[in-house]
Image (cartoon, rainbow, N blue to C red; front, side, top):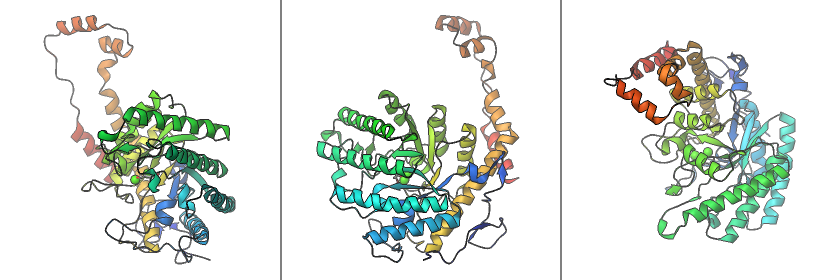
Length: 437
Ligand code: XLS
Ligand code: CA
Ligand code: CA
């Protein structure tokens, strides 16, 4: 049975094509800086948005029908989602998927039965993976939707809820290992608080860290060799979330000795919610050796919430891919944590949304490679610190001075010359010329 019978395998036809179901820029076999686009861009489908999200919001019900020919809330529906998802990924040429435990099955109030259902569905997913060569990028446990997590999971005030979180993580790790996932994500949607009048931050952080420690220990014991990731997000659903941004998450991981096993999964929309640029978050993770994986989407800067839009902004995808190319290669990939708008409610929209996103990142890759090959941006940034390449600057760089010596040196300067221009406008103009020239 075909769910996307209105398309065959999506082909690259170039920017001039009028075919909505063709790639305009993503040409999987085209080489960029010595590697194919497909190698540079390990795209992943987000199971939850693509196969489960139906456009409902707090003001209205679903607008998108994702029944895929089955009755919702049944295992039959779960199986049809697997079929639809694999057909979708094959036709788009997407090599990876990411999932939450509860994306895969209808969850009921019985752990043993849920786990049995997860075993059953993951057997089928594994079979599909073997048939198609599609792989799992990362798995995770949804510890934010079920009402029991209203006060958090690892940060819950209830020891019983903490144990439920542990049970879900254990099973989600089992599944991730079974499906050969490269990573395992912790996104702490409810790990935060709304008021300090009822919250012991220190105790909650200690508990979250201990849950992560036990998860690492268990994961390693069952042969999980991949990276654990924290996915920072500052707010929504909670007012304060503990994994506010990359810097906060890195501090937390180091504080609790988790930094050897964890990296970060940086999401574009979460970066801007934290008041940062996407590039800032990527660079902060990268300079700490912790840029593991990326959730590619975009927010709306006029809205203060997590809109999870498909990436269309080429300037942003360029700066993202610039950071990725500087790192070399991600241990993870590029996961489309994105959903079509509520009013884009057809299966055709789903396909066009992924084409848009994949093209946006192909353009980003091409542009980022041009920026790097051109060299002017990197050169400028490097030369800007040239006063640290000789004399007193070099000794500072080599950490070979004392404060007194620097103070004496400063006194011999009559006045501090203003340092060289930062040339922001000039650099932005170069970027425009490279992108659009
Ligand atoms: C929500 C998050 C979530 C994580 C996985 O805002 O982006 O979808 O990626 O739990
Ligand atoms: Ca999000
Ligand atoms: Ca995400």
